[in-house]
Length: 91
Image (tube, rainbow, N blue to C red; front, side):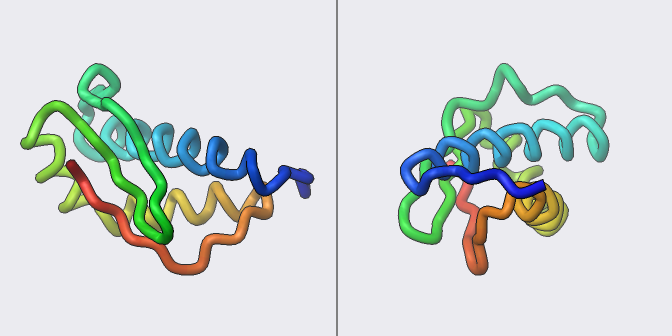
């Protein structure tokens, strides 16, 4: 299924998919609901900043970084948004 998402709306889809991916990975891998601890997701060039209000969540996310990236890329490819190289940073 190919969606015709305008360039100016792609950032919203990327943020939303990343948000849901992080929550899903934590639920599956750690059996933790981190929804109350997530603050925001920001895009700057090829860096995706994930802000939480708990440093321990950031540490756990660093350990799950590869799984988060892989699942995110699988989801993003389904709607035909091309992201080739990106970095995740946890704040």
